[in-house]
Image (cartoon, rainbow, N blue to C red; front, side, top):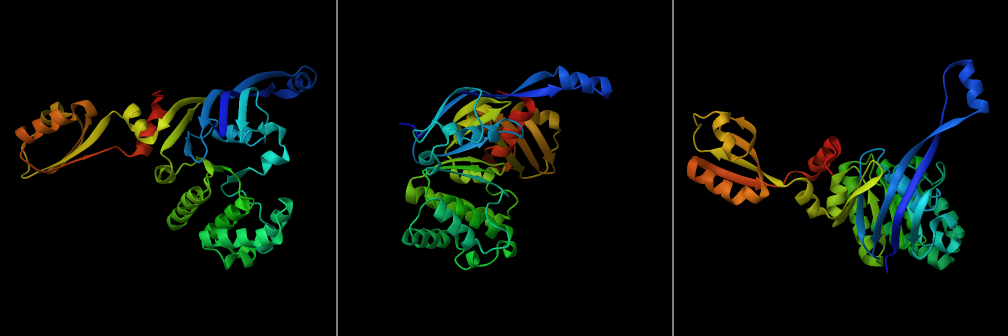
Length: 328
């Protein structure tokens, strides 16, 4: 049984239209007209228990709206969804004890108090015993490497330390399902790596299900085998991360270095692929995956090559190209 089951989920926002001037203001007051914006359009997917799934899309694609419907913060306009066996919009206590939502740089900890005081409030909300509270705080603080920092006022913590403390607060009740919206937003590289390692460890230790949105592709590649891609409210891809490259970037990048500077022009290199650059003794091509073996063999026969490297295009470039060109 999927722990997250979404069928034809939709969200439509009515937006009031108003003409300028006093006349427009009176008409807007007495005879208001609307246009309707489809933020999410008939989205369907299922996530099994224990999966870590990336949720990708440009700004305004509908990612956060979808997360808010999955957590019960907003009511869907259509479709059906179940999370941990519950309808999220009913917001039953049993449902809320099984989920958490973490949004980057959105804090729940009290600014002027030590993080531990806010954690005690969360423990009381979730009816944790003193023994459970001490055990979970100690375990999570050790996993996050913030044992001493939770006794300091939140305002004195660095951004990375605050994010770790926020994560601890969000996971204190040990939820089954984690909805993470840009959890590493604004963090430096070391803090990002620490959060990724913690999430991977938490998933393995407790079997938690994670739905993760991030503009940092390193988060996705480090944690997620499967990704969902949403564009203009519609789900355009649901599958393996590696399959995303095969579908949207059916080419490989071939870099060659010549033994001696060849007396050739870009035109003479064009038969080998889409020439990206020619700089002295080095050239870079884009070659279709199905033609790669034949093309590389032809290059080795025809050109005086000292070194040749084949790489996949960076996944952030692939996804960016999909969104820019609308290739779906």
